[in-house]
Length: 122
Image 1 (cartoon, one colour):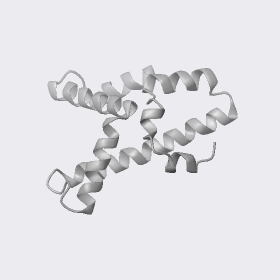
Image 2 (cartoon, one colour):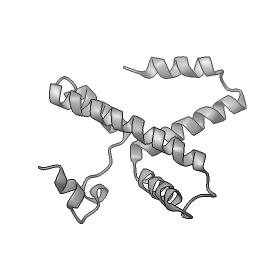
Image 3 (cartoon, one colour):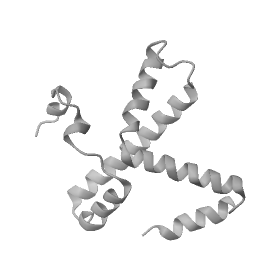
């Protein structure tokens, strides 16, 4: 399938292709990650996720005051709308929120939280 298909097709991409959750991406990596092509695609997904996180940081730093007032505000609003449909991203936001809440409640120090997270990684 040619890549321009995705850019010129009338139906939104996410309606045609369901969003992967973090668990699904990990399952794909575990099951098919040995295949060089699949591994390369997973690396590309990770790289795009980094870009998405940075774009989200820019959007968050813009705040609500600039949304939909100028071109940047319109772009920020569109970014937030797109990100709301990304399951993996919403899962990460929920994990970060829970982490901050546990820290605020004094349930664990940042070092304890990091060590818990690292022990869960395969």
